[in-house]
Image (tube, rainbow, N blue to C red; front, side, top):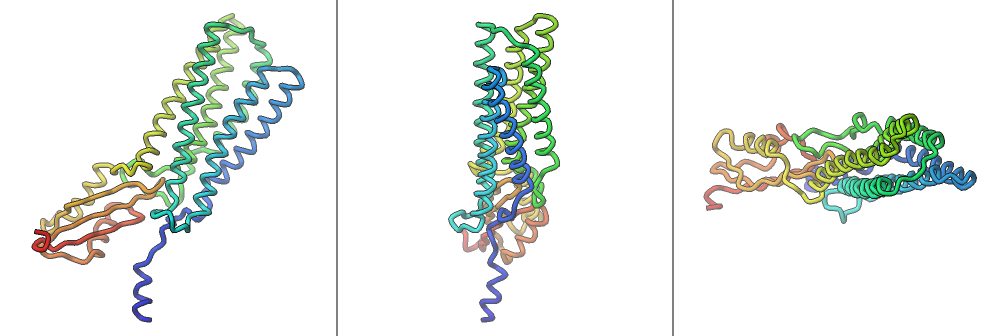
Length: 311
């Protein structure tokens, strides 16, 4: 019985906080409701009034509603399966996978914008400026509100820590934020292009702004793909984080690290496996305390070898 009680302090959960509802989940659901409502209104109005501009913008909103739905599904799946033993390090990477998928969809949308813009350059079409400006303004208002709701700079998880590498953000929320921000930017550029086209006759500004917007969206997509793929592929963390661990263990010259792995197991969560050799080996807890003093880790495994035995 006593042994069982002592064992409990060595047993720890691998949920890492993913069993609780994240702030980004509720925000994403609110934005989905707003986007879907605007989508229905624009598609219905486009059909009733015979407006291709309204219908096209409604279908565009539908594509982003699908992308946001993927982000929402990732939140709910990660939360509901946080206790599932099949996931060795919890479900943190589910949210990261949601962000990665969103980044791919952003790139697809950017490519579609370029194709459509080039087509407009080659075959210019007549633009109903007043109607198009109204649609773009409505889109800007809705997407501006969504950007405010998903304000990613103030929506970090409460349990996130800074480890000296880019695994601290909620990538799933970041993906949702970029989708609505891209929409807001597109609406703003469209308004600018339409106003110039209406008052100065420069119709070519409309497709030009489409290409500029696509370039910006592509840059955001690439940045998000890099940060999420680093976690999904278990990329080694920053050199600075590894050096802090080495300095903490090897500073007195009595202990040497012969193998070190430091990687992200989800947005804001990191894990490490450290193999140490020493002439005077200490307990794993001794080294764990030293490491946790310099780097915040949610999961740490320490392997200790006597130098003579290793040789």
